[in-house]
Image 1 (cartoon, protein in one colour):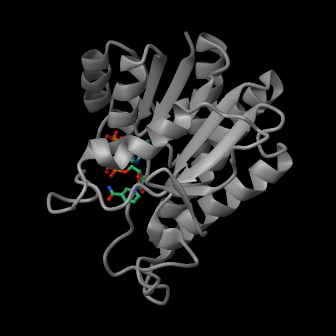
Image 2 (image 1 turned 90 degrees about the vertical axis):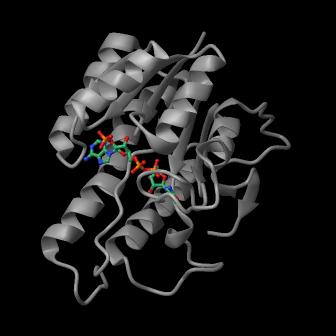
Length: 233
Ligand SMILES: NC(=O)c1ccc[n+]([C@@H]2O[C@H](COP(=O)([O-])OP(=O)(O)OC[C@H]3O[C@@H](n4cnc5c(N)ncnc54)[C@H](OP(=O)(O)O)[C@@H]3O)[C@@H](O)[C@H]2O)c1
């Protein structure tokens, strides 16, 4: 039995990833902001949960420390929380408040989670960190058309964090795998009802990364994945 901590676990892609991990026999702790919605999700999965507003970095840090103290070192950490930036958030139009809100939730709290929970996972030489990025944060491929500046740049930062951390931890040779996922446009509250992918399809690569067989001699980590394939950053 292993422990999986899933942020953004109250709904959407995080909930679907948590549901699949629980169904595969992992113990799961869900993290999200809205206590009522989170409690319902946890009841549905019959798992533990902790509500916290990850925009507040100190609260986030304390919550991750408490989770570690209560449940122990996780083997799987899935970071699937996130917010979209406002429609009119081009670089020259974005307010300081909007920039800080999106950066705090999408990027700073990712650092906090990895810093608190990833450190003992690395020490245990047995862990997988999967972080939901987005195609909008890529420096290549389609969709690099500007706009949504805080969102795109927060996800580009997530990509950089994953790449950097993978270098720091030996690219899987020391037992810690760290990868970013581009789920593609998925029908969730964020993706909207007309998105082409179901949550099962959108979460598939993250679930696979969390549970795949991994041989450091032949398999790769520290990368950006889409539909179980490596894509350029
Ligand atoms: N859906 C897509 O098409 C798509 C495409 C590319 C990338 N992504 C990325 O995939 C991830 C999951 O997206 P989704 O579509 O599942 O989003 P979603 O349905 O909008 O769910 C967002 C999740 O993040 C949590 N969250 C938001 N703000 C928070 C805060 N301040 N503190 C704690 N938790 C917070 C929410 O918790 P509450 O329920 O408590 O609010 C919820 O669990 C995100 O990182 C997103 O950027 C999604």
